[in-house]
Amino acid sequence: MNLRDKFFQKKPAAYRIHHEDTLAMQTLSERLSVLLPARRMDSIVIVCIGTDRSTGDALGPLVGTKLQQLKPKATVYGTLESPVHAVNLNDVMTSIHQQHTKPFIIGIDACLGRLHSVGIITAGEGPVKPGAGVKKELPEVGDIHLTGIVNVSGFMEYFVLQNTRLNLVMKMADVMANGLFHSIGSFGLETPTEKNRVSNWGDDLLQLP
Image 1 (tube, helix red, strand yellow):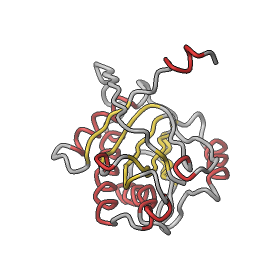
Image 2 (cartoon, rainbow, N blue to C red):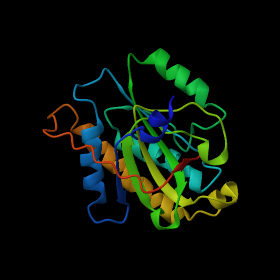
Image 3 (cartoon, rainbow, N blue to C red):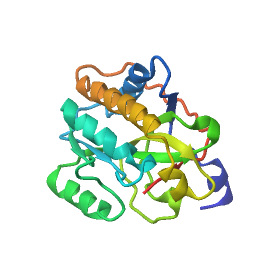
Image 4 (cartoon, one colour):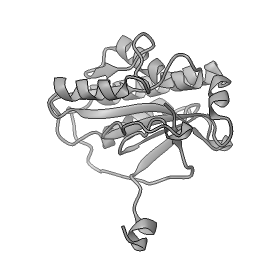
């Protein structure tokens, strides 16, 4: 890659909204509908990454559990009972590609960011990069991603995760699960007339294992 490519490479479009916004669930659902493919896929697969052994990193499994209870028109991997994490992620991804024909994958994970961004949910094109926040090499997951900034990055990430408020994580999981459920429920019924791909990358987000 030359210098021009390095410095002018475009980042994928992303939408950001705070989970306490009064229209957070509705807006997230609308944004996700724009990110879903124009044509109905053979299968939509949702991979919720994280572990219930860490409060901050439990966001993914909480979203997965809430989605399973809602019974979406999609296959969900990663719940509180059966989490998808650093140890089994490779095996889970291999299994997905064996069991599903050309799946459209939505990757969900917690991440760390700047102090003023804690509580923000991001939906965008491209995969999540689990483990990046704690220097782990793990496969990227998803055609699109849905992440939640649960705490502040920059110092003692594992300690920060352990001391993340469960109340925050639960509220974010509610918005993310319901927003995703409604967007998938309406997927294929009508095609968005305008693909409004607005970029807004105010933070360097770090995905967790």
